[in-house]
Image 1: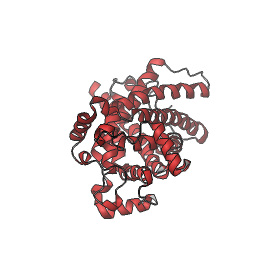
Image 2 (image 1 turned 120 degrees about the vertical axis):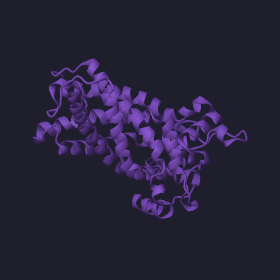
Image 3 (image 1 turned 30 degrees about the horizontal axis):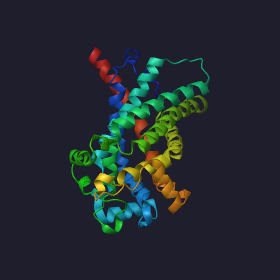
Image 4 (image 1 turned 30 degrees about the vertical axis):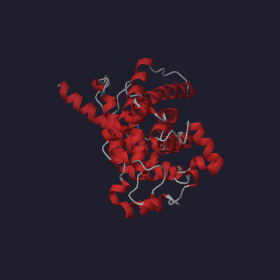
Length: 330
């Protein structure tokens, strides 16, 4: 059980470190997510732009993931490929630290029934992960908005897709302040109706599926729980399941938060999209059902390696944490 970190120590962890400080999983998971995001942000930029292209009859300059990476790199350089990295790191730490940390805390408090059936364990993990995902969405939504808007902003007119937000090109604090000036504090949670289902679905599938797949790999393939190959195999399967489940919500959240609100648009006009369902309805009407999966390939090419890196980093971070705590207790 990969994330049931409180129930038993890893084979590499001293038994005395099984009782972790409450903040341990928050720090390990949040920092691991930031490290993973640094490597995968270029594909996240592509995923965001591919989800935005073609909206309302707009241009489609990105025919494929590789073409998008090449075009952005050639026209905008490394800075273009790493757009949104700074707010993205805030997004990752606030989101993943809450998801993993709350999940681990809930599992510790609810206890683990070793006699329960695999289905019951899976459903319990699913429910706890969904709750932790909802809380993570609240904590990270403001950074998701800024990250998305900055990634959509291009210095090349030929590659620009979706709304181009001038305020997003500044610092994270300035972009957040601009949102508050336009829409008040509720503006920081614009798109939450799409982002929350995205995070809840992703959390429920990611955490519970990883637990289940890792248990199967260990019992059926003869691999050790702390073996690198175990983490990689479990993570790739988990990544496919997560993207399949969350893609429509991710697509709707991306288009919704990048579009200007009524206050941002000015002139007494209405917002482009009123809700995630409005995003989906208008997309299906103009682009067909497959339009909801725009950027889906990029999403998996981002999330697959990201999922592997997060779980590999967090497993190693837990071992490091245990070693540090053991040394401090001596």
